[in-house]
Length: 323
Image 1: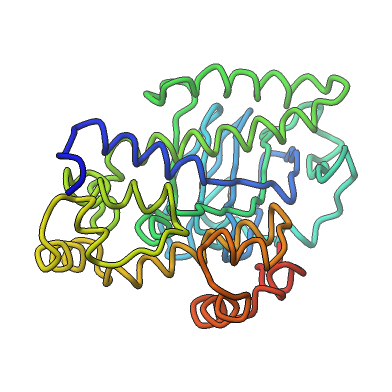
Image 2: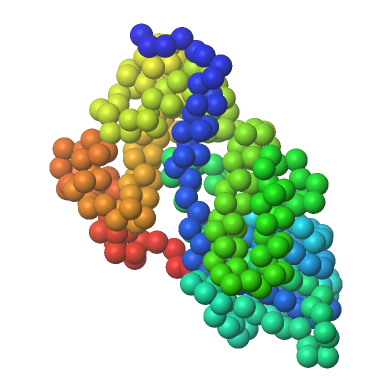
């Protein structure tokens, strides 16, 4: 048998999983408005929306009608890319952001100014990002994440977030050379910090993978699996990592995570494969070898069964959500 449970293994697993998280901004906008505005953001599956309100106030209205009051300094992440709107008032009409003319400010960054010329100072200034949100080995967490993750940038308990938000405010309001690109990088980092903090705080008591990550037995097998996904894993081998019997392990795994151990192994491999194919541009042959498949054909069959399209389609970009 393997190691006895150790309290640090749970945090080791969380760190391991967070290492696989990727946030790639595909579109950013610096937006300034007059006293009234209504900006609509359509749903973007597979992406995350990010908003930083530097100046003014706004109402964020979710697709389900829920409302969140935002003030200057607030940061919002919508990790599932749900459709929503930012409004100056509850009844203000909404215009889809994608139909508003934007001026290029830099690579993947543009500016939108809806402030009337009669107003010397905009009422609201915000920085918006649309990002490809890939959790890698943590993909199962996306289902239990809140639709809206709000951080008060002025009084946030999130470790290290306040100086990042301060830096964003300086850049968004200064207009210095290269500020748009710096804002884009800061937005990626702040979004990642919000997700990390949510995981470290216990994911708001979410069940499934979150509970398993903190389980002194299951975390051992999950850590071993995530560190070596290409190993020829069996239920017996995973149970040995947890230092419990095969039957107890299988029942415990199914009950807590909600899926059978070997199905989880396959789904994890395909999530990693998707990331390696689309973001690291690895060849299908190399990915298949890394994940322990005897042939490229066997890997391709498994990939299509889980992901719904071929690895070649992912590598060419056709298997990815549109930005």
